[in-house]
Amino acid sequence: ASVLKLGFTNPIPLKKIADFAAQVEQLWVIEELDPLVEEQIRAAGIKVSGGKAELSRVGEYSPSMIRKAILGEDSTAQAPAAVPVRPPVLCPGCPHRGPFYALRKNRKRVTGDIGCYTLGASAPLESIDTTICMGASIPVALGMEKARPEEVENLVAVIGDSTFLHSGITGLIDTVYNKGTTTIMILDNSITAMTGHQHHAATGQTLQGEATSQVDFEALCRAVGVKRVRVVDAGNLAELEQAIKEETAVREPSVIIARRPCALIAKQTAPRLKVNHDACTGCRMCMSIGCPAISFADKKSTIDPTLCVGCGLCQQVCKFNAIVPEEGQ
Image: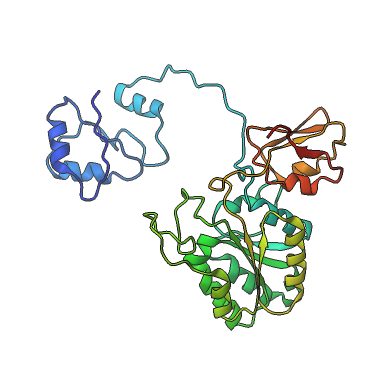
């Protein structure tokens, strides 16, 4: 059967559709939900043999549903064996993993936002308590503080660098203006990672890759009235924990900028790591960071060298010095 797949539907390319219809004996319009395209085709006087009358207005179409509608036959194809369920995870070496581990360890309530770091809500990190929409983390934290000011010391708003530029600055201004004392953590991985590594106003490059002016997060936060602004390495757990403890203890708005480039754009310079099974006690502490490069079997952890980028986070949580650099790198 011939197929015409429309790249756009507004304006609808009626001449192209009419030319296609003239070449076939039957014209079926396959579109999910309402028959928007089908109605326009019929209104243009083009004969439609089948469409929404034979197919559902609800849900997604499957190949077997379409086959049944057009041919009146059930599909004889056998479905492949089901793939084991695998939840989405942060990449090996992701700079967001350290901040979430530190927040969970310090038992903070975290208002989250939209980005790769939303995965911080999943096990084993389980560090995000709310996620609503882009830019909501900071005003939600402010609202929680106003509702229960006695619990503000346990509250941190987390937002990514590109989301902060998109819709987080207004929340920060509102926090200062309304005399909030919430701690805000900006996860600065120097790119818009979740949607395909687009540049933004703080990367110093345009979408075309041309050099341009670069937003200074520290200066921006101070400009709207935040006096306490500090930058930490997102891969240094001790530094992260100290910053979280100190900034949540003060009764004024503060910003922690956890900075480290996205693992998918940073060039690997650190050696890959491995587990010394003689030293490994099977305590599973390294599993608590949720790195997909680490697995556990036969009461020992193992690091997949094809996935490890040498970020060193697992080394920092291991209490038995069982994680060491691979030799010969």
